[in-house]
Length: 198
Image 1 (cartoon, rainbow, N blue to C red):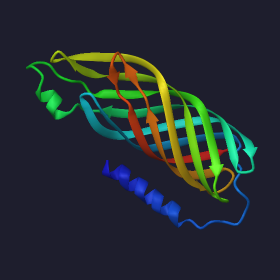
Image 2: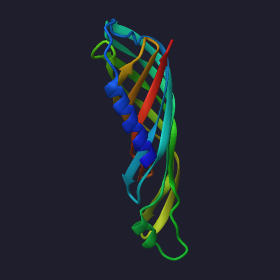
Image 3: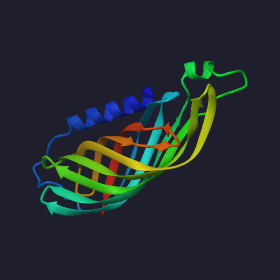
Image 4: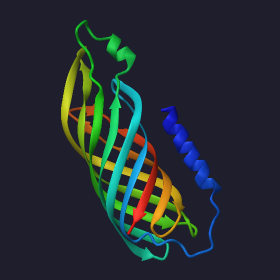
């Protein structure tokens, strides 16, 4: 957790120190692929934990204005696994236990890129999150296990720096909604991301 937060802080400081350039706003249209790594967190039901997580996406954007591009994306997110709260574990009868929760899945949706200056940008994304959700609930004092798929949504926003028409670095926050048989594992992901455009 500390290493992830340290990496995010260093990246943020590095982005803030970058000089603005005088060339025209970067063109974010065309094919792109990006990857993010950071820290996920969940605080739902019997779970309250953080873990290292990552996501990868690919897609295509169309230029709708000189500084704005909108497109489609598809990708995969592995949000990690989370341990149960100690008080939830201690409340179970002898011989009963709670498994670690796990969440990952595929995404498909829309992606936007808005240049505020020649290099600084804001980004946004939203769409469908088809999740593989695993974890436990405590019902009537006993653990009830869930292992299945959830069709829900994701959304995120970020900001960063376009080094050229082909490469950028940024900081992002994404929220993934996941619910199966009453097991809710909605989770947030704070991450550092890199994008290549073609």
